[in-house]
Image (tube, helix red, strand yellow):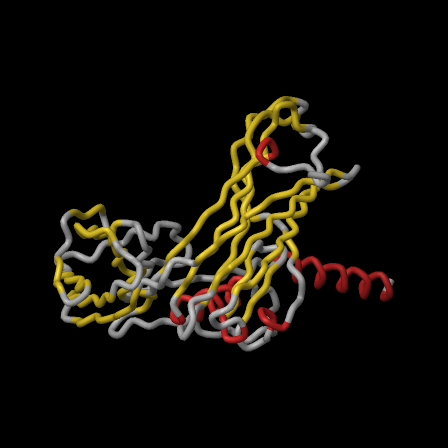
Length: 309
């Protein structure tokens, strides 16, 4: 009898432990910080995104700041916004490579300042593509020559994306779905010292991007081969289309550091990982103000040369 009482007591204790419901109360902050986010890009209209931080459970990044006075100075000429859309401010200027920019904002008694420049366009030549199919994979080779600008610190970012469009059979629902999606493509590049020095490069095969500083190719031509690997999908209904985009981008040092630091934040998956700080070059607020110049090459299977060409 005593033994039964002990067992019953133990069972009750276990049930009591499992019945305890733990809740986590997260208090929404009453004050929000100011954020300036802008990537002035060659060939595009100048605009900036100036807003407040949001509560992390809120997915809306559009938190306008009332009464903000914004002045953008381009090559010494001050400009005020010609139009606004919520927390985005547009200026009547198409940015050119080598433009020098600074921005000054007065908002809520705070002074915000940042400056940057628009880098030179990357000089790309001899862009070629090849296609090879195996039983399991489609392999696309995109090669080009990157001509580096001499006597300048150039930071380069290469990104590969693929757009899938057409009809695909969905085995889960036993129905046909219309597909139109863009995602990063897995690719490989040769591991060469010119672009793989740990202090000046970042390479993510799965993330579909490569970044490096031209320190070891300064003023030279650099041959870049990219091997884009895609797993074949047997559920695609012909004529299903895969469209590839290779984007070569010149970025300022500040944007390079921002991409590196923000990428490290997104990759934190362990409770033991120490959280770092995302790089910012903005005084008086959070955010990034850093220039860019891009070249894009888009192609599909019908524009790709066969391997024996």
